[in-house]
Image 1 (cartoon, one colour):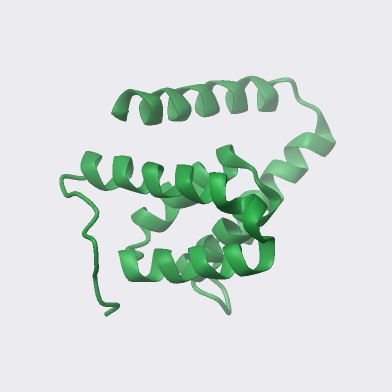
Image 2 (spheres, helix red, strand yellow):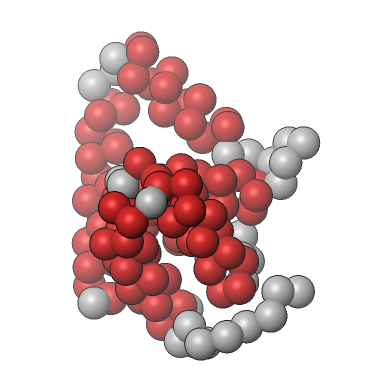
Length: 126
């Protein structure tokens, strides 16, 4: 499974590079806005990434979910925080989000395993 995560990251980086090198002003501006929105401001980056994760689950975008799980992990989000965010997404998105929630939990396991620790069954928030 770890190969899936590496392939996702490789594909994303390569295609983003190709898209940006095309030089389309509107696309480049949108990508720049996307980067800027997730930087710390009144809300810290970790909160913004959690918001992006919830929105991505509700919108059922597995690529976006994977990206935000990796970013949340990088921002130090605990498993308890992940699962509370998953709960919000499930409530807002309804049962149709369950398959995406399953894939999100599998992706979280891959990210944690790659970082050298498995996802614990329970963890308290700091």
